[in-house]
Image (cartoon, rainbow, N blue to C red; front, side, top):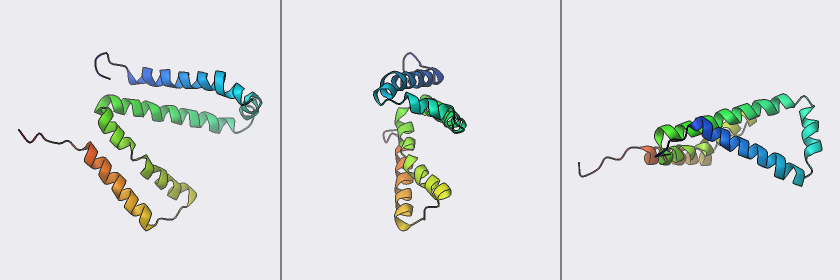
Length: 125
């Protein structure tokens, strides 16, 4: 986002509105999903859906802000740690067991992110 700066908050709003309109105008009618959408909106689960929407928006707001603050290359290397966070969430909330493959995979993902994110000094200086 060099040159003319795009405010992260504006970028996420454009993304979310485009996504919402695309789903509402193209995808939901194609799969005949309006009855299901109205059924979900009138049930008790609507609050879980609203909460998920707010958390998703907060997530993307932080994501776009991180791109703005540290640059796309470093942010992408940190973004690759989602594998670790997904497995950790599975362990905490779904009771998955920890095994050797998980430990080795976690170490590889985290080390790779650290190596890519670390500042490299110019050998000429």
